[in-house]
Image (cartoon, rainbow, N blue to C red; front, side):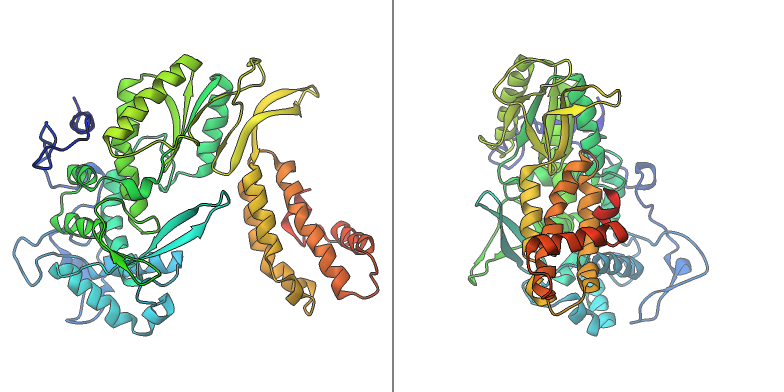
Length: 481
């Protein structure tokens, strides 16, 4: 039995006893060498790699190598030896990701006003073990179904601190993650998950489409930390992960609440911890108990492929029990069994469509490459995604642009249009172009409002269509048509 199977067995019931432990004690590996696990090795020659002033920032020396990590064995000055270069790299990653201010209202620009001292203070506190995460700002984002999506926004300093730990532990965790897990992982993408789903829907007629209710807010801390300690061996990394999990939440009404479960959706390290949690709760567990299972998981969005309706129903029952034991709940309305109608699958069933990563998989009448028309189970942009794009286009400053030239609209919109076309053009390219035709209609209204000689909307549309023929590269979806 390998180490992952042992951990999954220990998490089988997911119900701790009065001491907070499960019936079977988790056995940790004694080795602290990260090299053989695929993670960064700890070097004993940090001084030869980095030349650092007493209070200055690191200067890369001519020699190569990996900065030393982990607890100091000779107890030089700090209980934890954390490279300043690592903190600097973490800051650069956070800066590239951008993001807004947290509970302290300090933006990245504000942080950079006194960048050197701010990074030094963070490094000093991390190295001494005295860093305590501030409260996480809670923001609620409206959803298209009328609900809200809660986001937790850490401060800039805390995002850098989380990135420090993430950079150290991610290589080790990545070496264990399941190949069918695609969310928030290096060299993995939503397009890969969608392509796999398309191929498997063609081979297997049934799909179990699952949605975990309030996943990020429902993660059990005890179970998560057992999985963390199975792979993370450095005491300072475990210490700060525990502190991030229990950091208080600051609400917009000024109240503060402590947190006993969950990890904020919006934190730098949260997606990695969420993937680790579901790796043992779902990925490894279901593969051990359901041989030959095929699935795609993107964070908490999961699609399982089954050979029959009975198999899908049985799998659904088992997973409901499994998730319940681990403190999670399948959404009763969003979780469903779907028949992939089309091609050789000609049966009639209630549910014949599901949404996954902004795409809708459903039966469509299409013409094949051989020129024959038929009903096939294929994917294209979902109605929910199309509605969101139209709503966002409507919200652009069209009235303000009446005083501007077309090149300003182009400068503002091209990156957004290109991003939509690239993501939703994987399947059903003609459908996403039809959705982006809404931009052309708004552009015609803008032209009618700006140019007085255009008396009607039809005249404005003809002007835009002529521009489209003469300059097809002005907007991304024009050239793709």
